[in-house]
Amino acid sequence: MSGGYACLSVDEIRSSIEDRKTRVILAADLFTVSEISNMLHEVGDHICMLKTHVDGIHDFHLDRWMKEVVEPAKDMGVLLFEDRKFADIGYVSKIQMLGHQRIAQWADVVTAHRISGPDIVDGIHEAWRECGRRGSVAVLAQMSSSGNLLDKEYCRAVVDSCREIEGVCGFIGNGSDPSNISELRSLVGRDKMILTPGINLNSREARMGQRYGHPREAIAAGSDAVIVGSGIIRNREPLAAAMKYAEEASV
Ligand code: 5IU
Image 1 (cartoon, helix red, strand yellow):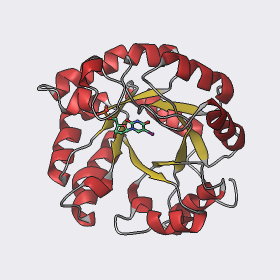
Image 2: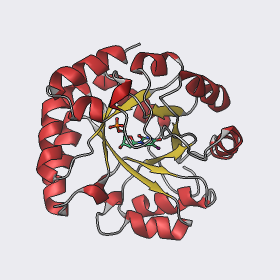
Image 3: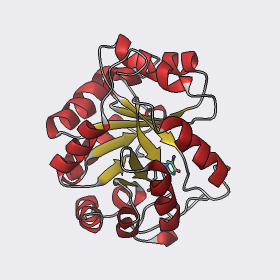
Image 4: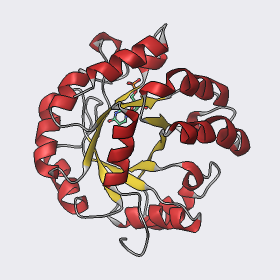
């Protein structure tokens, strides 16, 4: 418990990842519920979490979402990870969790910026509590996009202020540079997770400021799990690609 709410613990999330025997989080940046559902069914055996941006889904409808994505993912033991990057004050983040897409009703992990203050974590957990659910927050300590403003000083302040918060399961670290991950791991210690976007076996696939590193290097540098989108979903053979990433990210 923390701030009066029950959370999904780091141990629970880590053991869920271990049970899945894969450290790949699928970034399902697709445009319809069916596309995401189909992708989940195709590569589900090789991923530990399904990361979404629900506000990017053209035909989002909660009933279909629950039936075609959330229930199958739960049946597989795949955690639902909404990369919402909450950034507002605690109360607004709470109402966004409970808003149109009912994120609190189905997400197990959500991302948040630390910029507005630590109460954002409480706001998010209040929403889960009101739904009778538990979840956890991954806080952005670094980003993979070039020119981002999350510099070393900011990263340290984020980690120092969130490392002891029970409702925080860990931090987002930049997968395009393994030295960023090692530095982040030394700040974080072992008790919280590091989840790593900016991962692709082909760094030339990067577009719009994205930067990529290798999954094996990210894991070796201390990441718990790698977040892979284009490398799998834009591959002509998503299943083979998911298997390849899972193998590369194995320890
Ligand atoms: N994502 C990043 N970088 C970040 C954060 C999140 O790429 O710093 I925080 C998200 C964006 C996208 C996924 O949903 O991770 C990466 O997708 P690609 O593997 O297609 O680049």
